[in-house]
Picture (cartoon, rainbow, N blue to C red):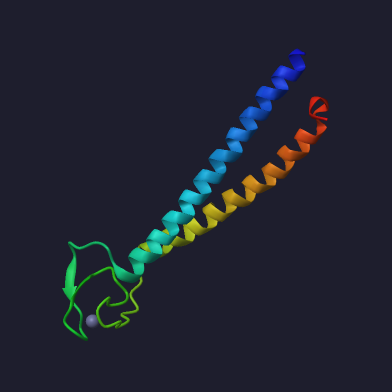
Length: 114
Ligand SMILES: [Zn+2]
């Protein structure tokens, strides 16, 4: 019976571990989309400059003018962050689903569930 209890705790820990990986992965992917959004439109209001095409005040980090759609083709620090978030986010979710399938296999091995 002690073995069963420790195995249950092990499974609980494993389940929490999978959940944390999934949440972190989703958060990183959310962050990635936020970074893409920031990169495209530019949320940082402090660093403003005029659009060379229409004169509309836009963020310096923006690569596309939100007013006229002029593309500046700028590359800023968010590029690394997007790549990092993409890689780590999908990596974590992949790992979580891989662990989840192992977890479900463990469940099938439990005799009291049959
Ligand atoms: Zn413009």
